[in-house]
Length: 470
Image 1 (cartoon, rainbow, N blue to C red):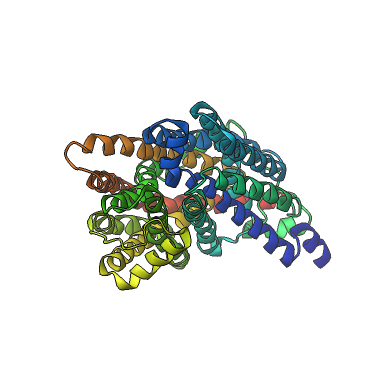
Image 2 (cartoon, rainbow, N blue to C red):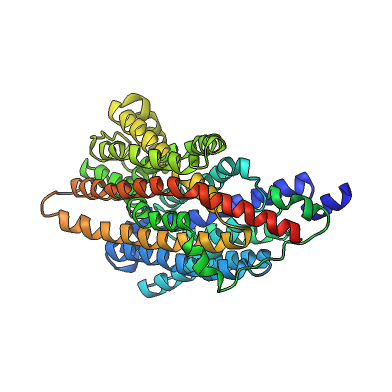
C-alpha cells in the first residue's frame, strides 16, 4: 500500500520540486507583466508613440490574458493540465521575444498580445494544479506563497525593466525569453498531480486505487454562478483590480518626482523603478494574511473572508498618505545603475521623508496583501476540484477587466488632471482617487463572509457522497 501511495502521489522531494516549479512560473508571468511600465519612456521614444499608447498596451494585455485564461482553464478542468502549462509558457516566451525585436508600435502590440495569451494558461491552469497539492488546513499559507510569488514577479519585472532597460529597453525582454524557455524544460520533470488528491473526504478512496473522474461540463457553469460566495469572489475583482491596476504607474510617479527635482530621464527611470520596488515590499507580509486566514477559518468558516475585508478597508488611508507625502531624492545624476540603487537604499536611513514613505507603503501593501491568499483559498474551499480552475479564471477575467480599466483610465485621468495639477502632482491625485475602489471591494468580502459557511458545507457533503460512490 505504501509503495502504491508514493507512486500515485509522488515522493516528498518530487512533490516539493513540483510545487516550487509551479510557484516560480506564477512569478515569471508577473515578471513579464511588470516589465513594460518602467520602460514606457524609452519604448515610447524608440517606437515614436506617446506613453499613453503604451499604457493602452498594458491595459489590453491584462484583458486578453484574462479572456484567454477562461478557455485555458475550462480545457484544463477537462483534460491533462501539464501539457497545457508547457504550451502556454512557450507562447508567452515567444511573445516576449517578439517584443524585444519589434521595430514599430503595431509589432510591439501584437507581440505583447501573443505573450498575454500564453500568460493566461500559467495562472488559471497552474492554480488548479496547486490546489490539488494543498490540504484545506494550510491553503491560506501555501496560497500566500503562490500570491507572493506573483507579487515578487511584478517587483522583479519592475526592477529588471529599470535596471537592464535604462540604456537598452530590449535587453530585459530577451533575458526573460531565455528564462521562459528554461521554465518549459523544468516542467518536463514535474509529476502529474491527480485531481482531488488533497481533499480529506476523498483520501481513503484515492488511496484504495479509485480515480476522481469528475470533469466540468457546460451544464456546470450555471451552478458555479449560482454559488453565492463565487459571485462575491468574482465581482470583487472589478473594483479591487481597478485600484491595483493603477499601481503599475508607481514607477512613473517617482520617476516624474525625480525629473521634477532636476534629474535626467535615464536616472529618473532607475529611481522610479527602485522606489516602486521598495514600496511594494509589504506584499511579503501576505504570508501573515494567509496564516491569520487559516487560523480564523479553523474557528469560523467566515474567517478568510473577514480577514480580507478588514485588510482591504484598513489599507485605504495609508495609500492616500503614500501618494502625497513629499519625498526628497538625493542620488548621483548620470551615475551607473548600481550607484543610483545604492544611493536610494541609503536614503531610507538618511532621508526621513523616504523612510516615512517606505513605512507607509509597507503597511498599505501588507494590509491589502491579505486579500490574495484568502481569495485563492476561498475559491478552493467553496468549489469541487473540477470547478476550481474555471472559477479562478472567471474571477481572473473580471480582475483583468478591472485592472485594464484601472490601468487605462488612470492614464486618462493623469492627462486630464494636468491642467489643474502640474506633474508630478497630477499622478499623485489620480492614484489617490483610484484607491477609493477598495471600499466596495471590502464590502463584497464582508458579504462573502456571510455566504461562505453554507457553500463550504455543501462542498464537503458533495465530496463525501462522491467518495462513497468511488
